[in-house]
Length: 220
Length: 199
Image 1 (tube, helix red, strand yellow):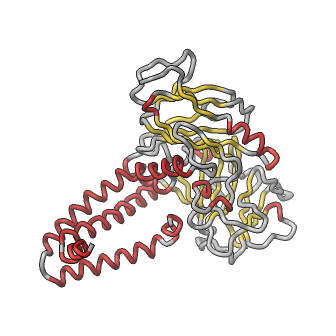
Image 2: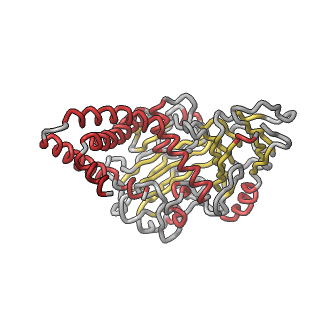
């Protein structure tokens, strides 16, 4: 569906505008109630345009949340506060109706949705031994990538990172780096580089070790 | 239901709400397009934008990125270029054959990897006989004698250059080039991807 809309955006827009023009023409030709129609239409137009722009990121990311929590990335629904690693690379076979269809076949993707209302989580990453990887944290209210763990930002050694929501008042375990999420919810997208077909099992084993656990003994 | 339809056809207020809402939707799309165009640079037919996912983006830009490039990396992590046209501005299609020529030392500079992916115009991968949807730093591209690299973008295999073949579909297509951990030259806008040339 989405795909059809993308492909035929201009013809669809044209048809909608034609129907609108016809409706407006009918009203004006009718001669009554023109003022009421125009006033309502203009108010809804102005307020609505702002609302669409303001809420667009939220709409997009709530669709991502549905995709992750209800459908998953090929391995069934991904429970909230857990991560799932795709066992195979993006391919045309996986393309249809899949988020991965727009991806790259150079990485294995890791995905998950966080809800930090019940306390912080700990992200565990294995020793990647110099391999390119990244774990991206995105704020679903505005689409900002507010934090990264990975080769560029934290290196490729094994590590643990505390991810906390905006309302948490506790103290992090000694020496554990903190990631402050601006929102109670967050989208996580991980990418683990795959050198070749024969490298796939190694990369997949590493991607599966990117995991989340609740912070021990933490309650709001 | 009948009552609702009657209301719809006689109430000008209800019609005003519908017309206003549709106009609002289209206006929002238009504004997002304008915002996105303002931060997109286009060189040799390749479009790229470097502000995706950055904190501090305005209301309109955040909406535009959420619509077009949702959950995409910040540019420091990965740079992306797309094109649907060749160097002469004509639409890319599998009906023609193309070469993407990187002069020696002009492959996308990066600290991780780069790849060129074949997509349909909506951005999804397309199937092909040899099951290869991308070529790049790990696909074993064969350089020319002078160190330059040619990528053959066409439907049928290029004789003697199969390793540098990116299979095209029958119809229109879109190319996506990625460079992970892009170098300074890319982030500063000094590096330009060469045009796709019809051969």
